[in-house]
Length: 216
Image 1: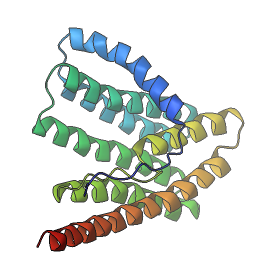
Image 2: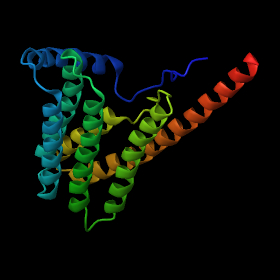
Image 3: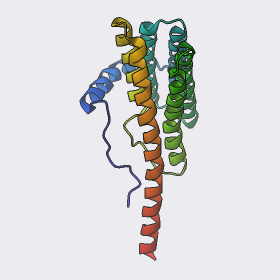
């Protein structure tokens, strides 16, 4: 009996994710040659996330979207650099995950301020809740020694959705309705993902109990 999660569908095409990863490997090699501390990249990722939130506050969604893309790239790079420099340590992983939550918070905070006089403010709250629960359920499962990466609305998808809606919404002058649609989508699917991960842990527990009874 395996505790590994089943392969699940992702919103982002696998070929696109693989291509992006391959391209970022080249960038990561540059930082690895500099022997850069990956925690520095984690900090910069958080700074860009805060910057994106500030741009939302001042109604500059195009630049907010650009910073969200940079934030996502840096978030990927810090893990690659950590692995490449053999600095994948417990504190580094904890530090990175913690800063990820802060960066997302400030992005959603900026959106909440932008929609402060609109009913979409409440959607923003539920979107942040769903995003947080996706991360929490995975962390809690891994604390129980169960790998849990299933679900279609993971961090990569959330960042791409937010960035794309910000940039295209700004270019085509439809930012508010497009972002509201994206926030509703993220809120619904991320909360479903959190429930899916919770039920997966229950499934693994039952499998372990069944396997244990078979051995007796």
